[in-house]
Length: 194
Image (cartoon, rainbow, N blue to C red; front, side, top):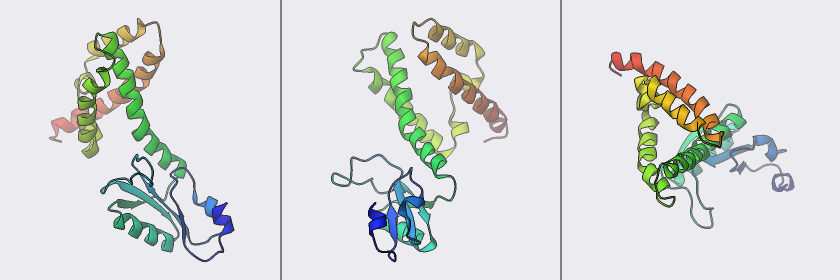
C-alpha cells in the first residue's frame, strides 16, 4: 500500500525476507534489503555488524541496498533465485535450531536434568556444532552418524519409540537419514585428508 501510494521514480526497497519484489509495483526501480539475523526491531536495535544481508532487485536498487548494508556494517549478498527458498533457508537456520534444542532439552529432562537447566546444558554443544558447520557442514558432523555407529542409532530410536509421545521419533528419523547421508559423504573426504 505504501509503495502504491508513492509516485513512481525513486528507488524503493523493502526489508521482507518472504516477499518478492512485486509488492513494490508499480515501481521499476525496486529492490530489497533483508538482514539474515534475529533482532528486536529497529526501535530497539539493528542486527549487529557482520550480519549477512540479502539484496535483490533492479541494478540501481541492488546498488543502493548494497551500500545501505555496507553502511550498517552488514555483509550484502545478492539473491537471484526463488524468494520462498531463500526465506525458507533463513527460517530453517533461525528457527529449527531452536526447535531441535527444545526437543533435545525435553529428552535431557526425561534423562534426569532439571528443566530449567536443560537448554543451557545443551547450548554449548549446539553452538559449537553450528560454528563448526559454518565452514563445512559435512566435515563438522560428529558422533554416531559420522562414525556409522548403527548400534547407537538403533538405541536412540528404541528409546524414542518407548516414549508415549511419538513426535520426537518422527522428528529424529528424517534428520537421522540426512545425517547418515552426510556421514557417508564425510568418510571418503576424511580418507583423502579433508
